[in-house]
Length: 399
Image (cartoon, rainbow, N blue to C red; front, side):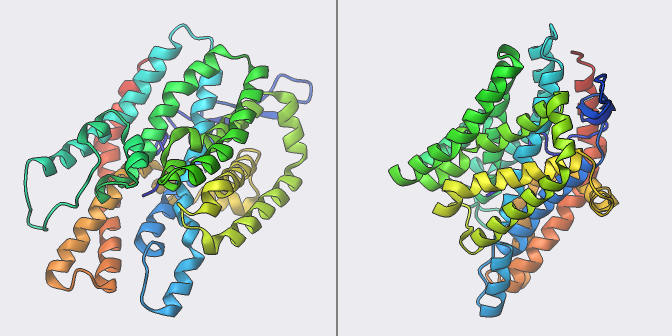
């Protein structure tokens, strides 16, 4: 029931960022959306890897006490979606900041987003819709869903999830974050366009402060407050806003030079946030009170700190990890992987379950990783022959 997006899988060579020299007297590097930072692909790769490990390993509830203790250690891997949100705010916010005066600001932005997001998403929704016209298939009955099919077409399924207290059919559970992203796309362009940079800072800080208060109020006031705090866009706007704030800092020489001068302190901040997350890990279920109230904000600040460490010039070891071929390739195909990994994992579990006992822990584990392998193979094919051509068409629309 996780992961975003979005920006999930956007090719950095097509729409991303680089460090260029400012024209200020300090000649310090500053971010511009004209090219790329390769390490961002690696960060996306880490985000999708966290999601995959959560659903394949750390979401399981093994009968063995020893395995149960091991599973607890990775309980926060579901937070890969929070890293996606921070990256989305940074990438999308940065693009909007750079072209905010363009006469084709809105039209180009939405054309490009549509070519990136909609074809693959609607293909998935189309396949999912078959459940409404057919009964049991060769792999058994479809899982039950109270979420209206039309809500998936309008990106409003997260409202229904919050209202009903369920993520619906497992195959579509992760699409809540796509709904959050689309709702973010409806609000962010208007805010960036209409509000001056000076006032935008205060707006972003206000959102970052209000989001955990809103989640806390929903958690204690409503029956489904945990899901509402998890799946509604205003409740996750702190992560998105932190991403925009990093993008804004990268376009303000005074702030950027200050951040560059404090890179050592930034690493200490990241370690302190990591320590807080380690304390939260045993109670780190995504819908539990500790995470819904303050945990999501701690995650957002931690991932924002990691983003800043990356874009201000990661150390050699971190850079080598983020530039590793595996992580960068995973980042490149993360959108398809995020959308399709749950249904393909379930399909493979059922295929293996036809031969062995479906409900056994071994079948669930082996089926999950078989599904991941199938997902990654199809993701590579989709990127080369379906997604990348759509992206290039989107790029023909100029700001």
